[in-house]
Length: 288
Image (cartoon, rainbow, N blue to C red; front, side):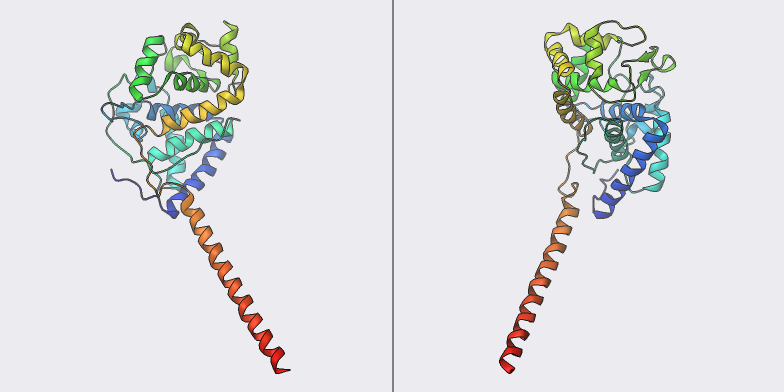
């Protein structure tokens, strides 16, 4: 499929979609599943073969029916309402925008969003996403394949501060934190506390304490939410742009440049008016 033309009209639709998503997520309390949708569409990327990634392919039954994507048809269907109102936006951009908005609406940091992703109908084979039953080596294998780092692994794991596991989807049950609709650093705080009745800790969560490199980030983020937010923003943006190279027209400076040009034109017009008025004033003085 062709790349979208990221012009002023496209950027306007992105802004409208952002507003629609804010209202939808706030009303439906669907931030956690929207974030999961964004991650699972992007997390299939293979840096070696340049396949998979945030390209909207998860909307196809071949992919959303993968075991790791159980339940995500709910989020896909919710996004259809936004897509119907803003049809120019690619699914690839829409799903990643939904993830960014989900973090913001639930109290998390603001993540820079650059549009321009191309849609694809080519679905990766099952098995590219993390398996919650496995440990340290598996996490590195999956995330290194995407081109991500140890810091990215831990920062992105902090996204489990949102939502809960559902037994019919994953075989696990329960939230990771006491406030599963609030984006903060409590995932790491709870992880360091050990087992807490009613809260979930997956094998992949516990793995973050077993490895010294992972653990140092867990300890940092548990005591310093600002550090977590800063690193999470960088890691989320990286994940959302895997295999995507923004074009020069994909950023908002298009609108800003138009504003600057308009402001410059107004400035020139005002200056010209002042000169003309001054001229007539001098002429009138000489005539008196």
